[in-house]
Length: 183
Image 1 (cartoon, helix red, strand yellow):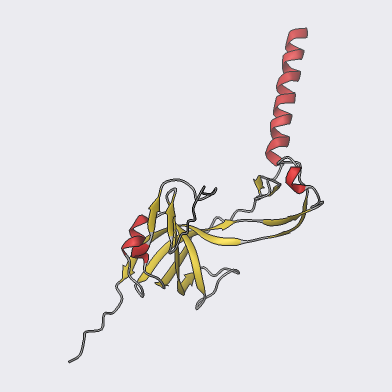
Image 2 (image 1 turned 120 degrees about the vertical axis):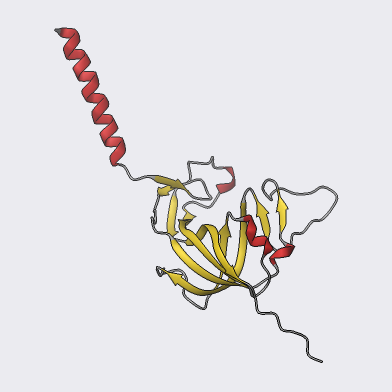
């Protein structure tokens, strides 16, 4: 009988612990390594974007861009395609549903996972389906000596909610109208 009560108590405590853990809000790390409450937007957004730049000049890179160079200088121009994501700039012509962080007529930069984007020309109109991704930006308390503080031990100050279009996939496009040369 004693073993049954002990086993029941362990099962009950396990269920209670799992219940309490499932009730806590999911967390997300900021660039400073501080955990904040994760915000999730479960909508899909349909964008129509007129391409602003020559995406043919996009370069494909394996890995991240970071670090430095010894005995030299380097620069990156145009858009970058790295780790399966690219950046595309354009004018927002249509958007459904609406969002608070962008409106029709805005110049926007979206993150895409669709490499077909590099085949577009300036002024092509592209139709995209995207998610909205939450990227919090937070100040930190106690800036003095921040460089020597271990990640995870920094306390947040004021946070600002930043949302951006991410994981965009091309669902179609309309070629730019080409003007024929006149004689």
